[in-house]
Image 1 (cartoon, one colour):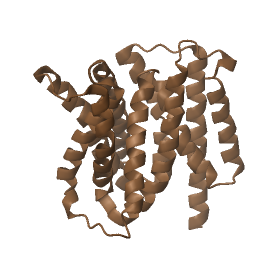
Image 2 (cartoon, rainbow, N blue to C red):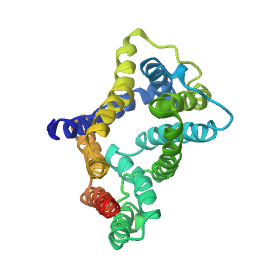
Image 3 (tube, rainbow, N blue to C red):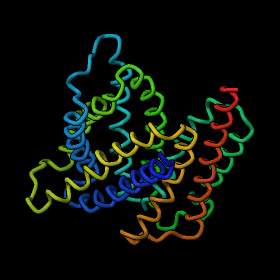
Image 4 (cartoon, rainbow, N blue to C red):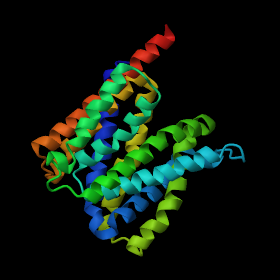
Length: 285
């Protein structure tokens, strides 16, 4: 099979997730960011439970700790990301969040290229601070939520790897179910009720499918067909895709400095992926 197909699937997954985020932003006025995140997690969990037959998973006292941590961080990622995009443009929230995976990659490496990548990412983040003047029209609380999302994303990677080794393909369904139970009371506290107007059902289902079921399916397909180094490089493009989706659908305008900041974080992420590729080649050799 040509690599063009799995590459297209991965790009479609990232595009789907960001379009789902734009639909979510339209629901914030009704359910709030926390309520929308809880709604998405609950419906997404139901879809994945049925799709992956999560009831067949075997849980025991020795394999639930990593899964619980994975579910907690998944809840934190979703709630904090939606809180961030409720105050920030998609591209900026996504770029700041991407610092989490970047930090994980660099923590386990001592290569010069990784330190160069960190420096580039730091410059990008600096451009989003008041010192550079790029925070004009940016909500500082939104930036804090995005940084919280980055922290959760980093923990999600670490705990998700261990949970995945123990529970296989059903890990996401189990983790999202835990995340849904954690996020639901937060969402109910925000919205008091999840009673839907019948006219909102297509929008809610569209958000859930585009943000959960579809990108998950496409990413799993790409994961089986592409080497990890290619996945890392391609997924580094997600902040740029988020910025383009935000501009196209939500008319979220970025200043020149903000666009440069996103670009630097994307470059830093690509540099880290290339470094990881070199480590894989050396390990094989």
